[in-house]
Amino acid sequence: MKALHNLLEQKVKPHFEEGGKYHKLWPVFDGFETFLFVPGHTAESGAHIRDGIDLKRTMNTVIMALVPCLLFGMWNVGYHHYIALGVDATFMEQFIFGAIKVLPMVVVSYGVGLGLEFLFCVIKGHQIEEGYLVSGMLIPLIMPVDIPLWMVALSVAFAVVIGKEVFGGTGMNIFNPALLARAFAFFAYPTYMSGDKVWINTSVQEGQAVVDGFSGATALGDLATTGTTQYSALDAFLGIIPGSIGETSTLLVLMGAGLLIFTGIGSWRIMLSAIIGGAVMGLIFNIFAQFAISPEQQAFMAVPFWQQMLYGGFAFGVVFMATDPVSGSQTEKGKYYYGFFIGLFAIMIRVFNPAYPEGIMLAILFMNTMAPLIDHYVIQANIKKRQKRLALKTAGA
Image (tube, rainbow, N blue to C red):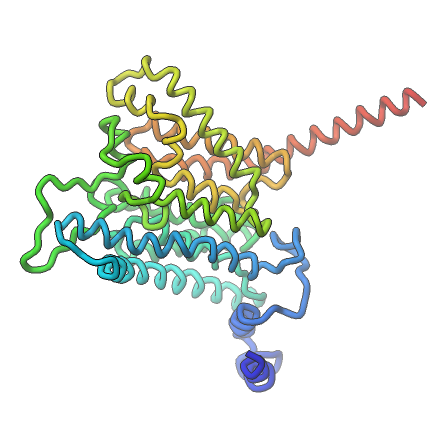
């Protein structure tokens, strides 16, 4: 690495510095150099000023926490594909099939997203903002496997331009960019983002056919429409169910949560309070299930509260997107309220709206808008508390 560092510093860097042949492309060179080597300067502004660790190291840690979900998602895509066709396939055949489907989405996500980030950095003349490193991984993981690549590209462009750059770039965005990409795809191309036909790839070659009685519905989709599902709670915990590419395995999400909490990057307050909020809403539904307006909704409301958190993207959203340090609540006490209502609303939306059973996306986006208000009232309450304490001390003196 020392030889590479010397090569960059002595042979390449001068061409990108002021007066060099490629000085206008300095943000691009700086982005790659600081990705490979720790920069020799300290942070001065932005979301990363809250800690001594620089933003690239923070983002790299989150990506490491996401890698198990990515690898499992590749295998799960291949596993369900061959199950749908009734073909016996080895583990490697399943994994390779899934990798062929998923990796192009990752490449498109990073290619389009980083290309736009580089373009804005060159135009604005500032350093690369590393916020997209995590968003670029999150976006493919929250998409169905059969979504066309051009839709992924458009969703990424919407998230980067409308979700980040119009607000001032990384550290200034109001909404979670990855969720904005999913929201854009969901509302612009709903037939590719919902229903029973988008979660399992059923492409066939000559001589192959989908088995009789095949259903591509997710466990959450089944529960929303019929009140029951063929998948057990253990299947949902392990992730051996159809769904978005990286969201299905609660077990691997919990492993990622452990890494984020251990390194201090993910807020355990938000994660814990979101689980409590989801559990409270699930218990309320359990108590009032008998008053549901239809047998299907009655059965859905009667699902044990702890199982509600195993289905859909609840765990993935709580761990990797609700804890976004930019769009989430900033105050310590505010994080409890912020996370609690995310969990509460996520379960409420999925039960009350069978047309859109995955409520975690809307719950997080809604609470993104509420986060500044929560922080405002937490700070005002603290100010009033101190004023009262000061008044009592003054009166006592």
